[in-house]
Image 1 (cartoon, rainbow, N blue to C red):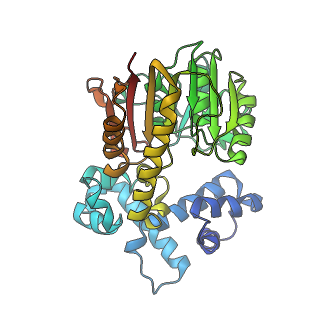
Image 2 (image 1 turned 30 degrees about the vertical axis):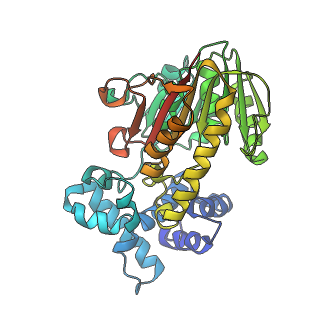
Length: 378
């Protein structure tokens, strides 16, 4: 790597400011450091995230470089023996104090978010075996995930963005829990679906694949930049059964077609991603949770009229707070008697299929996720 890892990490930390979180600072810093190579860039990212994962164990009197080294030491110690860290200490120091009022802080959850995250990829349905063979170092999901045909955990060290399989569109990087959202939707070829908050298109492209590139996906987002990325990803993947359009969430859908299904993968506090993005633990507030819960309820209410009678509405958020999960779902049901709970097409952990499910990071070594589904009464 040349220059010391802690120096690179310290420079990234210096770029973090309001509006520029750790992941954005890494994207700003790493492209200009080509001499690092793929392994070096990954090491810098790992050091920055370890810093925030162990922030409350670090001595503020030490230099930033020494704190980075200390954080990496704590990470290595934890990976060797998670039980060496008491759950009480993790509850007090690994998460902000307000979280205990929003969810149960179990020892399993607290230890899961202190681990380094798994890298999951989603291969096209018919290409999973070929992708696994070409990449090597791939594992199938645990049985508790249920059927997830394209999901692979990658344990290798290659820069996946440079591999032929990625460049030809055979696979995308996508967390296992996000892939389960697509399987929960279970769209059929020839149907019409709306991914109302599509972002850069990860779940929309999965829906396209599950539909065999047949039918129609409406993919909308308030950010034209994200939609541009979606179009580029779709072209690489050879997915063309979609239409991208801008939608701010403040009015009706930008189309008049009734949908067989609508996915509202709403903006959220992201508590379920705190293993992967530990900086967010220290920038998210209870006020954010309250504001986002109101946004989520409004998005569900505005998306619901686009569901055909007999069609399905699926709600997902990568958070685990009660305000953004059960409370939003309860509020929707109370306000929309024309919708009834619909069994999800997935049942992680081997549980009977239900109408709502919470996936915790410790369940599948993936992001936390809440999913609920309803059917519009005929």
